[in-house]
Amino acid sequence: MTLPSRKTLLGNVLSLAAIAWIYGGDLSDAVRARTAEVSALVELPSPVRPTVVLSLAALAVGVVVLGGIARGKAEGFKGYRLLPILLVGALFADLVLAESRIPIDSTDMASMSLQRFQKQAQELSTRDSVVDDPRILQPLLEEMGRPPYLVRGEPMTAYTLQVRKDCEGPVRDAPGVRPGTVLYCVAPERKAAWVTMVGLSGETRFGPPEMLSVRGEVRFLLVQPAIPDEAPPEPGDAFRDSVPAGNDTGMDGGTSSLQP
Image (cartoon, rainbow, N blue to C red; front, side, top):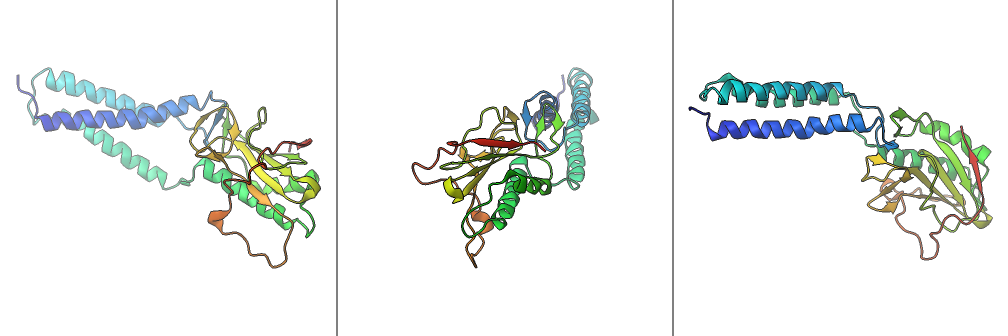
């Protein structure tokens, strides 16, 4: 029996492995996003393209095995080229389609929205105190767009606001709070406020709602009483990764909630 070279066989095996990994993962994400409690996706992915690519890959495997190897076809058999051609063509199509997409993940989008809210809340602060009235803070959510998450496969339409008072630090755990909720936690005497959000961690794509965090550190921003001629923080230093010891409970006081 005449068989193709090891190089040709290896090329087919690697091409098939790459197709299964890339488009099998895409298909898995498209299916899982429809049932997951929260998905770190802006839009519901379509299963059509990965299904088509995987189907064509299955046909190509049939041609290689049944039409080529089983019949002892030599190196010149064109069926041995199908899998590499399919891989290159599918990746090229993905590259063309990707040009029209915004290459920002849900964690970055949520972080930018949180920064916008914190900046506007900071502008509402006086020299003596930060704002704590939900009626004043609520309109700020309308400029944040919609949360970059799916809930049971459905896009979220708007952020929600929850104001907590008499806090000693940022909220680090919020069981039962829906994703897309901005937690505005005000210190006693309105001397500061910590801004956090419920969504998913940066390392999680699907799962129950949790605090927006990266590498286990909850992302939060601090709102302080206005200081004349204070220089704004550098963009890269906007998020605080830690607070002084003893000031991290963040859920001491009462709660008032607003649903848009």
